[in-house]
Image (cartoon, rainbow, N blue to C red):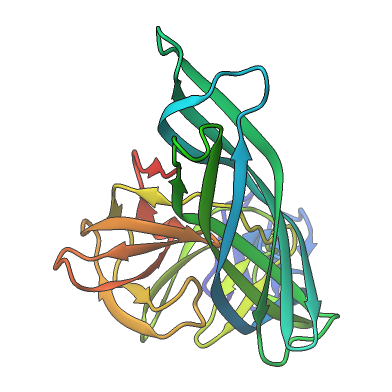
Length: 305
């Protein structure tokens, strides 16, 4: 702070750590009072290292019967899934078990003379999927995400006028991380949430303040920032890239290899969503990959399902 000067009740001059006030106001022993900057000190942060991530499909098949006293089916209009959710994620040696449930609704035209549209539902359809993750152990943290990939049905009016056979294909993602604590030194405390940009040799990653982006498969999270994972039904539409030299990766996370890079203003087509990332198709119509959601303006992206 040798070049730091400030105007007081008289002229002032400062040497490295001591500020002498010539008008006799007093002596300031710490440069912190002059600049308002706290002394650098250690802060404890959590480092989450991705052990592994994987995706598997889950096929759910069952029959749905029209409940009495509703009329028989003349024609099925639509079958759709709603309230898809994950109820538990359990880690066992080298594997993660994901359990969830969903609801299915069938719209149909009845066989009555005026053919009114009818509907019936099946709730609490439970499903389970196990996904292999090498090295996973019961004390490790795991998050999961799920989306509907396909919904189909079979209906044979002459054989079963009150039965619809439903087939649902789910896409289930899982990610296992290990967490350690470490002390780092920072110029200012990490106590606010906001977007910051970190530029590395491989491109730009924008993260929430309190999160430090690093290369490879290491995430550093600061205090007050809770990791989240949502349940997605998939998306469609387009989005605009808001970052500079944004990495497009092979999977939803910074531990996945970089395919290519895009820049501010580029338009991409949305295909899927997992862990806050979007699977996209680039403007060439052929290149696909994943981009972090906070680096995209998704605008009016339409949820599927």
